[in-house]
Length: 287
Length: 279
Image (cartoon, rainbow over the protein chains, first blue to last red):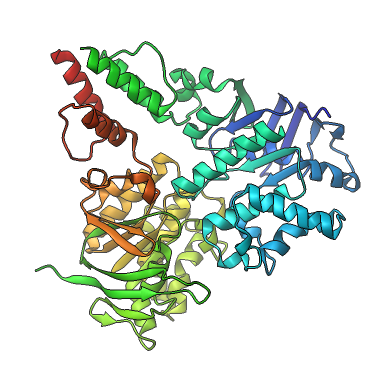
């Protein structure tokens, strides 16, 4: 099925008709291809979170249209027809572990599938499958989610969303506050879901090193406007763009720039840290 | 000899449903005015240790002395007056709809008289440079501003020890630096002791000492300058080695003559370009 996401002239204002009115999305036009890994970046308040909430109609536009596969979301779209859309589009919010609520990990993961009317056997299969995917050991399934470590809780929260078998997965800062190992686990999981199951991944992140390393495409938001949609290389090799949009430079780009300024010039730009280290050492060995 | 403000002796703690110790025969001390970082993977015992220090959980064995008081069931309030904690996610700590009420919360709990409370709130907000936001809604502030408000709430109760529980992990690099500098300023001014749980290997460079935990056991208690040189396999400990350190260690591995001490981005770039221009 074609799960393209298409925004046409989407505008969204908070607190309309009050003195606090604020345009959070300003005439957004956007296409996200099915099966892609897209990162959305931009400063706090640039409209990233508002944008993603339109993809599963948690927010509806003031004007414009959003298409997600066979669904169309317009200003007057009725909430009644959204259940199927929300099954298609899984949303992992910031600190999703704060939404864990059940007595056991198992019950927490079952909640979504139960709501969608799956039978017992199917649900038990789902629990096995998703707990495996997120690396939650069977021995933890009957424990209270609140007894788990922060990193494990985060994974259970992601399992909750995967349990409804979404075709599009949206994540808002999914690695915030995790340790390096936990971060790497989540990012690798997303890459696997994307590559092996062809799930579209939409990632909101401030971690430019991750964005550079994992995504196929980057969307830059600024003051409610979509100001750039390009390949990660195009963005991260262009220092002027990074400065213009006030984006943090990946460390590899930063070091390369510092070296360049002092006339130590490498032939290629390496976004990967280890490659950059090798390139520097090789150049030093030559001399 | 320097004054010990925290003294932990042979501390052991096991969660009821676990078969191994979360804290395993841990002993260390921290001097008044020191900044000590506690690092290690999730599950290494960092948070358990903080909960023990603040008396939220009770050890199975060993003792903890905070500012000459050995923690027991009767002196928890007194202990908690000495320790202020700044958590990871500021939004979880806000309880009021204005900044000033929020900062007042801890004082209200301690039944301060109203006029005195207002004075302390104002002073604390000035210390963190957030006075002009005192009537704002804390949830509408930026992450860095929120952490400054949280910090004001903590210093309002005049603690001797500030514990940072991954307090900067949600912040962008600019806000991170600002918060760390601010805490350092307050530390020096008020002779505070700072105990910081962090995964940020750049941030540990601000500390006097680093304690590395693994499975509840202390692996290292060293200067941050020497941490990466003294560890054979950093991946074992869930540490993210900063780029410049990675490069320095790789240069050493390849026979280049570069110092054993921690190095930052500017320093390593300088080293590389100097080496290159001498050739």
